[in-house]
Length: 315
Ligand code: CP
Image 1 (cartoon, protein in one colour):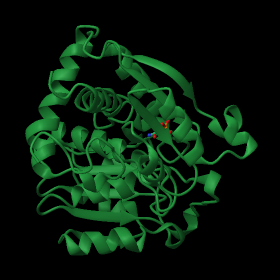
Image 2: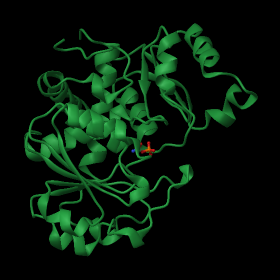
Image 3: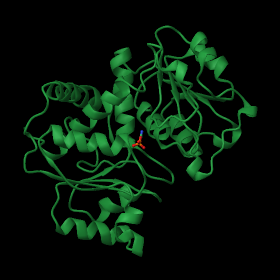
């Protein structure tokens, strides 16, 4: 396997990435991408064309993929964040037909965020062009977010083994925590503390996977009890567009000054964003808060590395 991941060149699930691939190949490549970024880019992907086709809104994922393509000298030839309205999806065209048609234009990669099922998996079945999953629904994965979260944690701790992480909020619908859980299952001695009200607990599919991979986890409702124990507090928002409500009467799920005071000085606070009110703004200036800084940077370097690997594997 080595320099390639399972299922290469499609990126559909977080489970595709092995520990060896992540540590030995992917991490150094993201560091190389950081250097290229600091030098304001290169022409490595000159002549390569990307289509970013999003059926759901996005700020970070779409922009960072598009900026990544630009920093590497490639082109984004078509981009929408509302393909349901601004493509023939609005007239009832199926995803399969859309992907077949896009393939005829011979782009080099398609980045897709789909609003039902695992759209990227369906797309990859018919596409001759690499497909990258930029987030989907049911059961929900966001593999490139997991990669950037993994990098953020690795850069902070220097390793993943022995990590203690609290995942907080909407664990049922939040695809980032699902993908990150799958990725952490590749490492040793990881302990995950799921903190959520009863209606947004982590799915049984992820919990079964964690048991199979000997990842210890607990489920509870009070972040105040968990905050002192962990290296990472990973907060998520309620996916209100899917009908989720985080009822604060059922426990303590907010990251605020109370939680800051309880956390270890060497811990970090992460959030995939967008943030609504589940992290109070007073937390932003704490040095442990990385969701508006290092986590964002990791997103760009991670997506540059993926595009480089998929579109120019030999250079
Ligand atoms: N983290 C994330 O997926 O953000 P966007 O929805 O803005 O892409």
